[in-house]
Length: 390
Image (cartoon, rainbow, N blue to C red; front, side):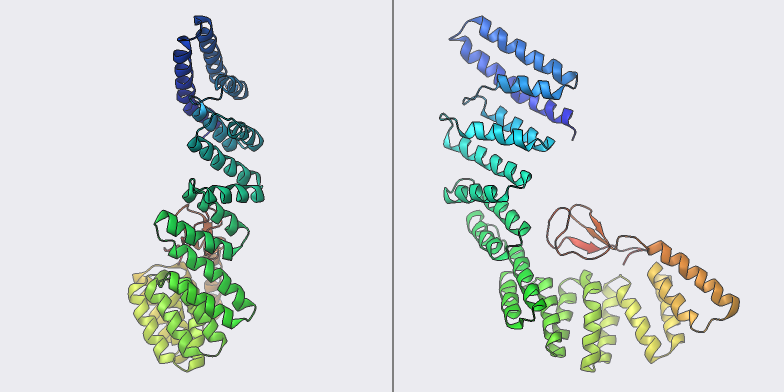
């Protein structure tokens, strides 16, 4: 939405405020005051129509004398300033409101919440945190204040505080925050795993699964922890649990799962699992894994035949590349040159393409993210299926 459109949305508020102010004061003041308000209002409208937004805003600010009738106008103006990136002006508007002695408690808490959002936009996270914490302590607008606090702690990667506020939000708002809390515990578990503190990692994973028993990330990290400890059967169970809960995460678990099958000496179980997965998952990753397995155990002809069958059922550039790779091993002369040219062409088709997309905001990425870098939602980034994708 552009600035002109936002200002037009503000017009009804300013118009109503001016009308109410004029009507109420007409009982106590002369008609000259009403005429002055009307003149100012239409002068502001004229500035607006001529795209002189700054002058229009100044006029509306003068019209919006702070009292119980025009608080909404000030809030709208402050919000407009923040949207335009003029955070300093938004802060001044909201601070001016908060300083007025005649505001109701409800109006003051709304203005405080808006001021906190101004501070967040300005990068003044310490001030925003203090303000939102005070609002929560006052039990005023606690759910939105808690949501902002959670956003701040996520930005600062202060996961214990994020967990604390998410639990409070769950209590205050009455809506489960289990999925969010589980993700925060997974962040702590992943950090502990990378530090080789497996006891702490296991403890955090237990907390994550207590908050959300279906958290695929927790099961995935558990698989990595078990594999790191040499407990390959337990790792296999954890990774297979991921596929059971959400088969879309197959591309993320396939490599460590196949490694665990191999180290545990359970390749027959691996083949059985992959065959079952290809029946209910139409991505190409398990197909390519099966093709490599067939090439190693049954020979290249079996792998080529399998890939040919799959390509007829599910056209896939990545499967075609795998078929070319297998065929190249026995190709010579002109046939080999043709296959190499075809492989280069297919490589260019997938090169630079997004393999994942956020289901909330549409953000595209080459690698998987647990939290969308764009809209900051958790668990919304999924593989892109199709001829070029997964």
